[in-house]
Amino acid sequence: MSALLEVRGLRVTYGGVVAVRDVSLSVRPGEVLAVLGANGAGKTSTLRAVSGLVRPAAGEVLLDGASLRGTSPEAVARQGVAHVPAGRGIFPTLSVADNLRMGLYGTGRDGTPDGRAAVEEVLESFPILRERQAQAAGTMSGGQQQQLALGRALVQRPRLLLVDEMSMGLSPTVVADLFALVAGLRDRGLAVVMVEQFVGQALQVADRAVVLEQGQVVASGTPDELSSDDLAAAYLGGGGEPSVTVRPAPLSAAESLPVDLPGRDVRKLEQWAAEQGITPRQAAARLLAASLERT
Image 1: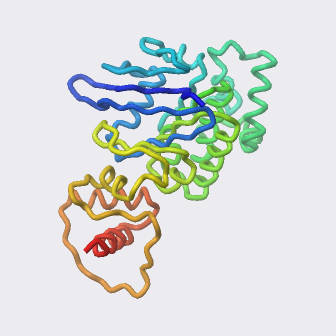
Image 2 (image 1 turned 90 degrees about the vertical axis):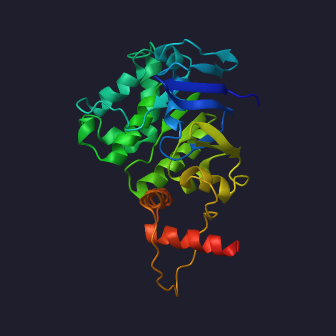
Image 3 (image 1 turned 120 degrees about the horizontal axis):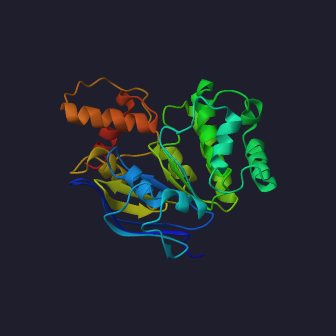
């Protein structure tokens, strides 16, 4: 099956700062592509370039083989691309029902039988939204707001869904439910590009992944093809860092060992621990164990 989305040699700059340099990726219908990397790696800028929110300095974004260069975000959306931004981007003072209607705005289907059918499909997928239709969106929980953000995108009946940091600030139980939803969207034939910090969960859902570091692709492949070294290089800076295992390491019968680390490395360790859903102490133990295995 040919690619629905192709990104070729993408370069995004903000003034004199290069956020994305020579990024290439593709996704086919019915496929989930995870875009991974530490904060500042260029993940969000890549999605924004695809949806037309930023204009690339170089490269091409192709949808069904046709260039989107110079296309406005509204026109990109009308071609079947829905973008769920980080932070959800809902309208907090509007009701749930009105937020969903806003998803139809610009498609020409608001108030039509087809538009009402699209909203009904979303309410079937998200029962909590049906219960809260009259409630102000800003008064719902974070997980419910994320469901609303996804629902508002899905009422457009997109061919390509871009999701940026879907799990940000949510509990593990809610995150698991949202990833299950993404898997269901793939089964319906929707192409999904998912920027995500929860690496383990993302790789369980994704068909393929690309890893970005400092705006460049440093690794790509299926989850089985990506090595722990690929992920360590992106999240911990590479440069000879110990290999990171994504399998839980047993911590029973462990003894204490005080270790001094530079502040920069402590922050990297804390970030990686949060992404894996473990404590910094557990993260340090895994990294040390992996390093010792290589000696």
